[in-house]
Length: 137
Image (tube, rainbow, N blue to C red; front, side, top):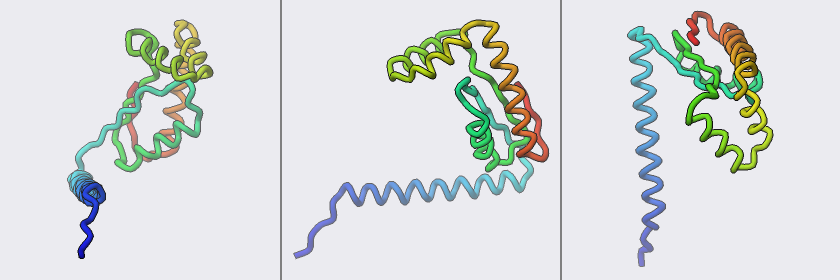
């Protein structure tokens, strides 16, 4: 008697094959774009006030996979509804240290210090990691 395979396992394998094929197709498409000299842009937005140098460096390393011509960088903006929702969700999740940092940059003077510091930091690290790069804030 032949035991049928579990449908879920087959579905999972098929989905993995499909996703793998899609990823391989994307790599091929990227190679064609690179070869054709198509400019590449990466958005690094936002950088959170809790990110340290190593986390920023790691994020920029990931971006290096597409060898960007331009990195668009934006520090977190404490004005508006999105920031308030982020602050609320962080508080509900119990990340009190993050809540403190987010609350700190809600003050305009503190936000200005944070924004300038992170703009400089991202620019310095990006210049170390990329030979040719334009950076926009």
